[in-house]
Image 1 (cartoon, rainbow, N blue to C red):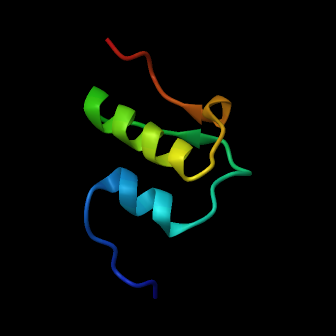
Image 2 (image 1 turned 180 degrees about the vertical axis):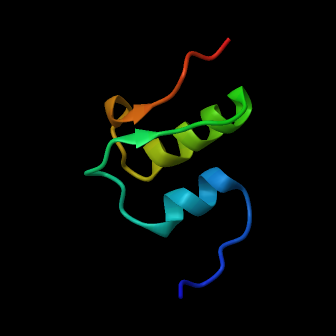
Image 3 (image 1 turned 120 degrees about the horizontal axis):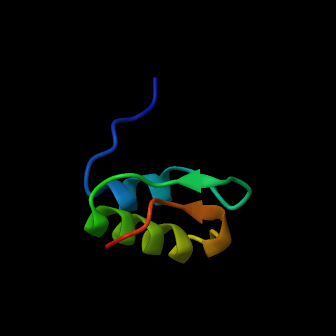
Length: 56
């Protein structure tokens, strides 16, 4: 079993693993999508590898 992660989803996911060689689909509210995308980019993921529905 993995250690339980707590906190904001974007931070927890970005810190969980190296996602730089993955295509990532982010879903949720516009603010959650934006925050998660920025956290993943700060962790080294190329923005072209992060996908989400259009934000309005």
